[in-house]
Length: 279
Image 1 (tube, rainbow, N blue to C red):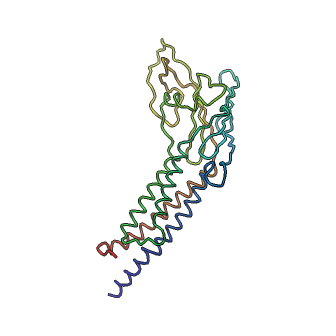
Image 2 (image 1 turned 180 degrees about the vertical axis):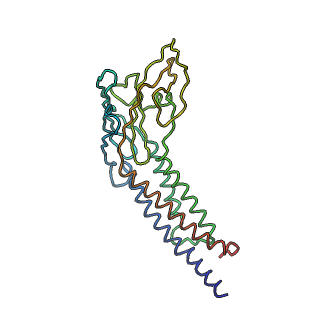
Image 3 (image 1 turned 90 degrees about the horizontal axis):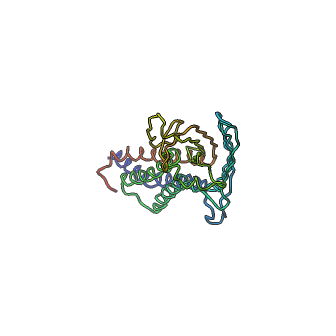
């Protein structure tokens, strides 16, 4: 009987003290993560600071550029492209009045806010009655954190017509030449810029026309139809740069997910003894 009583006391302690200690820790970590995604004009900080990132790649010096990130928006892009065929140098930049929202960063931040909201809705005074209730909360928090992480680690797969139709192509001044497409996305802790050079397939071309499906990164030879033209990708230039605070955010997600899982494991071990004993 004594042993049972002790286990019961220990489980009560776990359900209250230990659970709330972990919830506090999770809140602290996620507040740090959400600070990484600071937004312009959120509270007293004023506008998010502008950060310049120099794009590079080990494989190519055809594209050089600087992207300016301000919170979840690209506020400036300045790109130089050396055309492979004639070495002509093209320069294009965002129009002054334009910003490009990075949906991935916006979504990730929203998921972090959701996770924090779930945690703050169970403050110190809240009494968890059963292990199942703790597991349910942890699952809900983990779902938001997994979604936040996935938004950064899995960029959208787009077809070439979708890239061509994207508002990003209309952000530049002078306007992009019609034989160029541009895409920008986040991949893990990197900000990536892809420039596609295109050429028109002649109507009498003997090439078998097969439109390419969706991809994060298309390869030379990918074909698509745009307007009344059939086009083929002739060159692909991908440049990128590491964004340190995205790196931090990903680390915070990993640590938080581990904490949630450890608490779930502890509670599960006890709950298997006590599944039939509500307190």
